[in-house]
Length: 113
Length: 115
View 1 (cartoon, chains in turn orange, brown):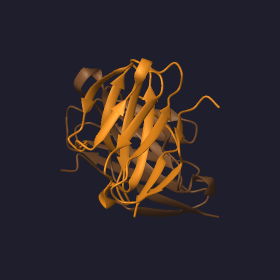
View 2 (tube, one colour; view 1 turned 90 degrees about the vertical axis):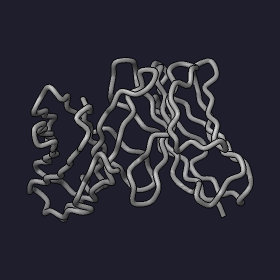
View 3 (tube, one colour; view 1 turned 60 degrees about the vertical axis):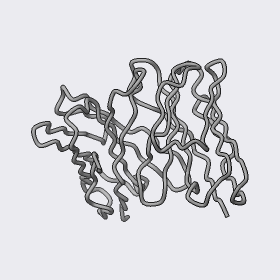
View 4 (cartoon, chains in turn purple, cyan; view 1 turned 90 degrees about the horizontal axis):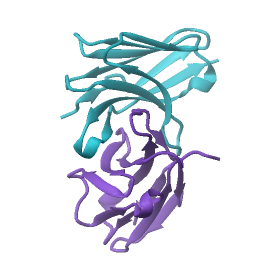
């Protein structure tokens, strides 16, 4: 399977705990995006990497959120001190330079209890 | 402020008929538009796109029309099949910082195709 892969698919955590998600983009794609989708809404942009550089962050990305993409390959999204409002589907997408079509992974469903 | 609007939360059509999903946008800086299809508990799947310099793009049963003056686009599915039942998201690409082409999504329209 050469698509975008995300792990885990589901995560249930207690409020206040830290969680980390992983995304493996399509191998030849140098652009990587994180989005968040809540119930009844479309995905909302969180952050963007070109290779290993994080070049844009949405104001939705509070200080409790951090994302990395070491070596320009896979990416991780960490949420510290989770809150119930963080419950959502976290989606990773990748694209190639000059290509506007972003290809999404299956997402990580986070539930904070 | 919802820059991409899908005003119909749901649409129901009969198998074999045409499905028309609509989308309106407000930002004239959007230069590329995409439609994604999403099944429950899965990520969005890219369906079809159109550049702002075109007014129509066709791919098999799917055609997207763009009316720039009205800031409106639509997705036509002909003929509709039960497997097309899903949530359809309209998205617009906007150039962001560092060359990002982040997507701004509508809230989606749930299409149900009845056999």
